[in-house]
Length: 235
Image 1: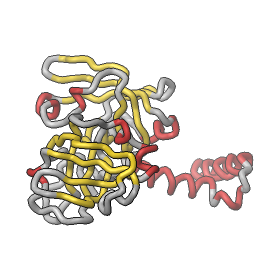
Image 2: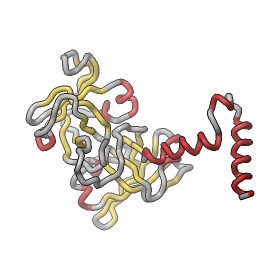
Image 3: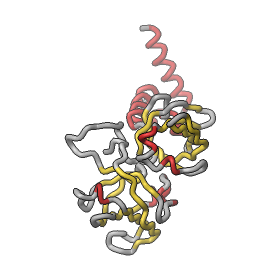
Image 4: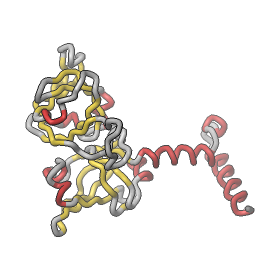
């Protein structure tokens, strides 16, 4: 579990598509440097979020650490496009007894989004994003939480038809995360508010019933919704 409050910005040392070392596990791996500030209490197997993606430490020293990247991670996130010298947002898993400053972030990236526009306003910076997977737009609401490359942010405006939403970065955040260095067209990792996903699933189950009972029949689902609405109105 994470908070979306980025601790430091690290630097990609290397990305290896097939890492045959023991710590690489014969899959893709990523080595991050300039991370000494968060490695003082590190152990093998610890979780560190890189650009909002929860990953497992397989090797580390005083300044660098390595993580493995599963095919699903490469498919869902922007990590596969990283190259040596790129900056990345880093956050250790939440420790017990610490102040909770952001929102509940799992480190499980849902999809990516592309930067549509980047506009200064005073000392703040507006960003507009277009979501890659339209199915996640239902969880993005004005003034709701969202994690972008692991940064906990507040949604400003939403356009469901255009699949876009906006956020504003205050001056302090601009100096502590990687987003201001990204240009229009670049991809960012998106994790929507998990409470919204749980709520949606619970309500869908209550209104529509188990999918097995409907056997894919939308008319049955609509009839059940109509019945629920009718009962509510009668009350």
